[in-house]
Length: 153
Image (cartoon, rainbow, N blue to C red; front, side, top):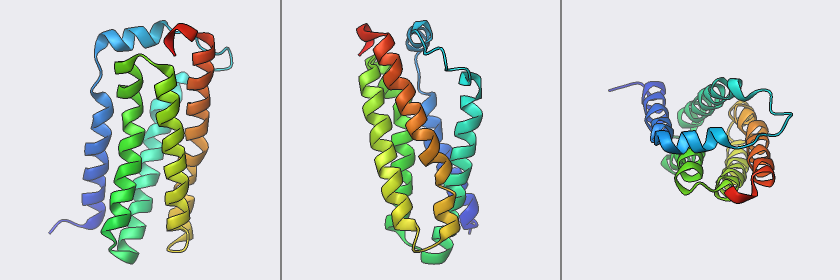
């Protein structure tokens, strides 16, 4: 039997692969959009998401070890799937509004997950904080890009 940390890591990685289902023409469209002048950290975004996913998986591991609760694991997977859906939804529909909606919904579900996890483990809840910090930044950036590119709403 595989250790739970490995299973959680594999599931996290498998779900994260969903964000790579992108068409080059859609990426090209996105790269042509105007960005806010303050968006100077765009090259760090892959590293930021890597940290967010590692922290989320670590949080899930702690919760699993304490509860063996499949419902909570499904909720972790749902939040990650929503995070991963952001790029395909935004790019396939070529709609910054849709990206903003997915980002906002992901934040709300991440907040709910954090409150569900808090009574189980304060550390597991703290490990979700990077997502709760980054998600609104990413969502606001997408919203701001919509303002700069109204034809792409």
